[in-house]
Image (cartoon, rainbow, N blue to C red; front, top):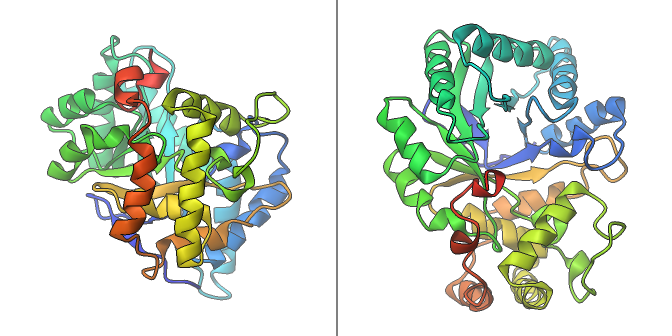
Length: 343
């Protein structure tokens, strides 16, 4: 098994710097074979990628993890098995956030994941105008002290609310946000606050749903539903349109390919490494196509992005940022991290 670099969260949990994202099993990316999805997870673990990211709203994701986790434990008596790290999200609909509601949600996830406590609970809230998110976080913090949660984290919270929450004495381990070469909003405000408060950024969208790859280099702009056939492709194509459009995006792919050839790696590995090297970034979430043909085919690219031999030089960064600096200001157009879900 490869020794994959890890980062330690504030509560002591060590997670891989490449996390296996399970959004793709939610149903928004096409049909998934649940039994095959469970089987496919083994290749990631065998490669040393033992950290999985999921959510209560990702369809069967928590249940798939639970089935795999149970199988792995049942084999531990025969041979040593690596420990898994499981990060899930709680994304409640607006309602009163009393202790009973919060604890029931945690135990529901624990039951599906077949765990005695949650390694990391990442909390999302849809409407900042509804201050009951502070009630929920207060109860989550209490339940953390009681041992139901190891790490208490956030998903898609902005810098202002992150500061508000920490000022109340609630310890936050990480914030999961969109961060890539086409969306560098975390660098504007959030990373400075996170560095000062021992909060790790766990990033998604780093490969723009696969658009940041050789597959789209030199290709005509995809516009139809057939060409943008998954939720990820459709979402991140919209981000590209806001960022600067397809022509500028092609210039970015050319620059990345040039850098990648110099390092003997894929374009995706360079795009991932760029974000891994940003201040406050603890890890990058790379989607797993579990339960479909081709699952696991990008494991090598993920491992290469973590290699100490892949060091982006000053010249590499200049070539990449020579393109990105000509893009539009997404902070001005969209707002801070997560505002795209609330505007």
